[in-house]
Length: 362
Image (cartoon, rainbow, N blue to C red; front, side):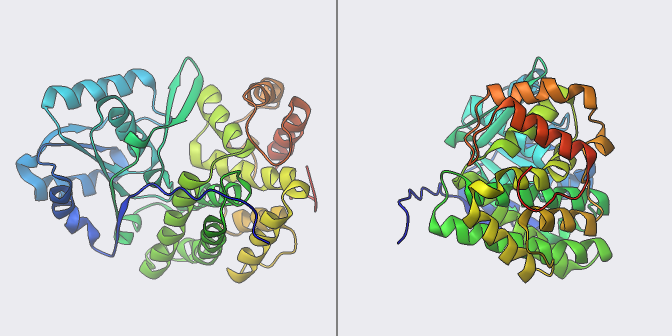
């Protein structure tokens, strides 16, 4: 018997192809945009120049002050730039920080976003926005910030360094894992999440072995697309709340935080989400990561690609565990296993140590 569910998928146009960056002008025309602000950071500067050159005077403003976790004061400046330039659309080029900055502008102005991802963040497929102010990161959902069109070009990810590729890929894995046990999961989103785990488990080791392997890069980007789509249609649990706290309050890097926490969050929820755990195990095995326990398999994948598996290695301190646990628990995240301070404290302590999770729960 199929459990009751609601499957609500916001519309987004997806263009996926090697060389798809060349379609940006055509896709803008489909959106009716002729005066755009290009939002991009330093790592994707070479691609920003390609887009700006192709669009010419259709780019009326550029915003390059892209900062991790989207500080509210910088987002306000981006809004002012877009309004002053008379922009009628936004191009978000880059990873989650660029997309997040464009979303902050769209939230205030209603301008449509065309996203061109260069990492595996997945934010481009969601209506989730985030802003950091006063050492607290606030997130929410607003259909205005969902990009209208997403242009995926695997060639743009070839220049992504191996270390960042690995952490970003584990960030995508985290979206998929939480999507499998989220309250908004449907039969279709469960299938896409499981397929996303398989695609990333198969492709990320190949990306790390040969960063120029365009087939592996395409497979990883495909998995990341499924991860973003899953996150956008299902929801988040304790893992994502922990990572938002680590970023907003302790300024830890976003993707490495996801990589360091996800195996332990999986273990934390294991006994309360058996169907999700079985799906993770199936997908990891199909992707070439042999396992019988979901949390251990996720940890093994991270180790296989040399992605972070410990919060200590990315700068989190033991003396901050109690405070962080209190912040997370007070937010009351929706999660298969009830979230309390003691449970989160144990999860964070395990993630701090970086030891391979034991079979079962944290």
